[in-house]
Every structure is written in structure tokens, then in C-alpha cells.
Length: 252
Image: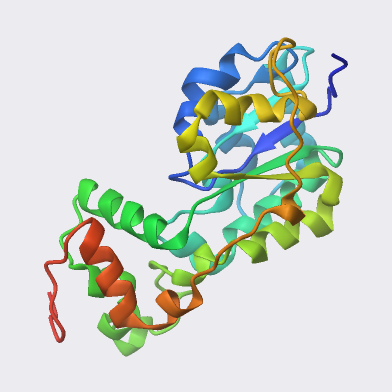
């Protein structure tokens, strides 16, 4: 099989199987060099928004690739689930940086059904030491003082972060439909290896892997708008999956 040796960038999202790809699949890819997340973050995330230099970022990544096309996979490239992607500002800025560094890159975006993603995000919050109930976690604006009214002043969890079609559109506009590939977490969970092999057509697979195209425009992104807009429905869905210690009016 003839492989496309352009750079491959898997931007997450968090909780869509990126850890498995980072540890169990991408390091064994023969057509590309998997780049350590520390280098990816130093090159693309560490620079201040007013001090980013595409040439410097490219230099760092290509040095680590050592003459082989680079393969990047880091869920932080799509922004933090728990901080709302810093009011949605991180993900599009990273997309623009990636375009400046690797204009011909192939992009992989992992998504997950929102009700389950919200449960996974809350579970991670608790694992990290969070103590608030789901109501305060999901709808933090009601618990902030006027001085931190705007999310640009005090970043926090944001349901809008999971409106995946917005970020997908940013990448489609920058890199083109043929270079953006969407993977469903539900597909991944049903068969991680088969899901990984489906990336063969972008070069991110061993030569023996079969090829099956995934067209991002054919992926049905279910936004579950009612669940996101109605606090009670969102609350019920989370209660079913992770439990809920908060009650209406709970200020804890």
C-alpha cells in the first residue's frame, strides 16, 4: 500500500481514546514518527499567544521526528474539557498554529456522544479532587461573583465546548474536507484495533493494515441539544451514570 507521508495530527478530544492511541498504536506506526506529548506541548501550547513562532515550533517537532514524517497526538490540542477550552479560545488558536506549522497536515478529531462525555468529564473532575455536585459543575456561572462574571476572567466548565461541529468546521475551513477525519468514540470502543486500522488511508497505520475511509461529513454528530439546554434533563442523564450529590439550590 502506498502511504501518504504528510504530517498527521490527532487533536483529541479528551476522553475519546487518545491515551490508547498514544500508548498502544501510534508508537508502532512505521510510516510516521510519533512525537512525545512534551515536545508537542512545548512547540504548540507553551508559547504565549502574542509570541508564537511557527518556524520554531516546526523546528522542534521535525527535530524529534528525525527525518520521518511526524505524527502528533495530544488531547490538549482541542482544549481542556474541565476549563471549557478557556472559553473556546484554545482550540481555534491551536488550529491556526497547526496550519502555520504544517499547512498540509492530515487532521484526526475524536468525538463522543455528549451525555456520556459529560459524565466522563465529571468523573475526571472528581478524580482530580473536585468536590462540587454535578449542578455546580455543569452550570458554574450561577456560583461566581460579579467580579468573575465573564469567562475570559475566570475560565470554567462550558457546555459549548462539546458542540463539536464548530471545531470540525474550523478545521474543514483551514485544511479542507479531504484532510479532516472524524472518529467516533463509540466506534473506537466497539473495536479499538479496527478503528485504528481505519486510519491507514492517512498513513497512520502499519503497511499491513486494511484501509477504510471515514468521511467527516458523513459522520452524524448528535448534539443532544435538549439535554444541553435543559438543566433537569442534563442532571437526570448524569445521575444515571455517575450519581449526583447536589440538590436544587445546593451552594456547595
